[in-house]
Image (cartoon, rainbow, N blue to C red):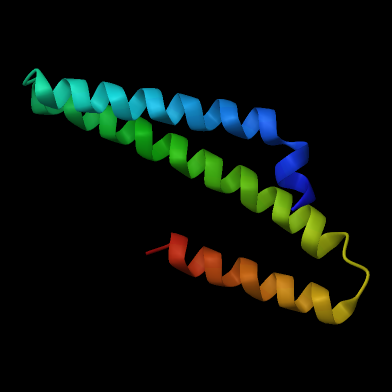
Length: 90
């Protein structure tokens, strides 16, 4: 995937931020933080994962659907994205 390689640094930065948020969540659970603090950490990690998913989906849409000259391949890539959206919506 060209967009994954092109955006690698930005995506890795997001993944590392997510790892930090998950580590903070683990720490909150280990130290017995109040449930409101734990919920905030969960929401932050979920939001960060959602942002990462949207970033990769946008690259897929741009590079593999919009810019794809072959109608058959474009339809196939659109189907891949549709299936990902269905799974993500669960």
